[in-house]
Image (cartoon, rainbow, N blue to C red; front, top):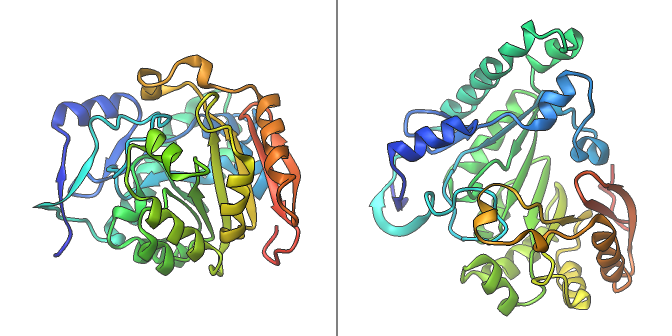
Length: 316
């Protein structure tokens, strides 16, 4: 296998993540599953996540997973433990689990994780029975999924099970963006220019991200650009964002406020978290620089605004 990397984590880190709700699947501990707050709420009949509101996904039937807990950037706003899970190429061989093993492991682990809800008086039993048959996979839990060398085949595994897939990528591997076709493909775009990108991501992949934006414009699957807004850092130059968005021509744009959660609290202050009204205003500044886009929805609790491409044929 020609995939080589240093995998910088130890068993104590694995145990810590286990206590935080991350559950590893497969033989070699590079894939993980975690249930989210909205799955709990959905099973109890207490609401659905913004992806449900925007795209019709049922949170209780969604597996949140990753085939790669490792990332090649160190974004300030990431709530994951980047200090424990980084990857350096061309150092040491990685043994990757097969797509079939990962898919089967995710299905089994998800069913085990939700089994405890069966005995709760707050559980809606009809919803619980649906949750036991997941229909959607969000490949976005932790790390960068395009670092897994068989992502295309993993997506095919889930599609063969008649499941839909969302992939969220940082865009640093345009060759993978080119070959995959999930149900919906997200690219994170958290800077309007390279200097801001380097301050936020601590990476050196701007040219790769530009190539991925061009690849996005040619995709047959539904596409989304997500902008995570940090007050005082990247809520600037809306015209710059607009120019990049024109290259990608996504079906949707999600402009989302940074949330002061998890490990990001070690890197950013609470002041970096913009109010929803501020996110809406900045969204409108970007949209004003675009011809074919308009604001169509929002979720105040998640501080996210949805923008739709009126010229796209892939709108829901």
